[in-house]
Length: 291
Image 1 (cartoon, rainbow, N blue to C red):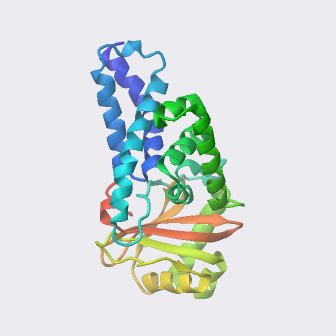
Image 2 (cartoon, one colour; image 1 turned 90 degrees about the vertical axis):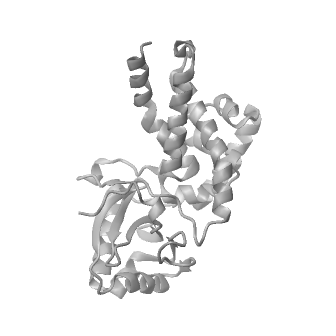
Image 3 (tube, rainbow, N blue to C red; image 1 turned 45 degrees about the vertical axis):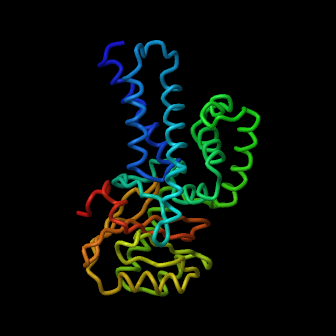
């Protein structure tokens, strides 16, 4: 295999590798580091052609690297100022969201937050087996456990994840419509209209990383959350655009104080059950600017 062929083969796998690392770590930057390290290890091999299954080798390598990085990442989160939220994965929203059959759950904010309650081994077992389709034998190589132990880890993780997932998730078109209505209500300063879109037990979280103003703690309940959101948006000239945020319709906003924010929405049974707003500038370096 020539160097050019090796590069092409690796680049073909890069999106999946990045997604595995991101789902494990909740950080775009750290995921990129893991993928780059996998490339360096591949390039350093005396004879890459000895690898019978290049895709499997890369997935296992990135999985191990991400699992190793998760330990130090969790230690940093324990010292984090304020509420920690995953670094948002942001892209332009498709022209016709109805073309997508399902929301991309593998990187949803709801899933990533549920995964935070799992041990690193449970998280890896669930992601690599249930989400990314690896066999238990393959996952066992990554986490350093027996296949039987990995099966048990995945089973425990699956129960936790089921408890945290929306029971009646929206279609992409429904998600987009609800986020559009949410944005319109915020622009109008329409308290009643906003409350109607929120579940009674909705939660709002904000991540400023101690660097910019954000919600200092979780706020729960439709009316308290609506009042809070309108206090940020009512009467303010905010640049706002729709984008894909962690696989679903969300918002990217630029406030008059020039602070960028990314909002993701978890929807269940036709109402917003969670609003997660990342404002920490260190987590938004990959975000395209509102136009």
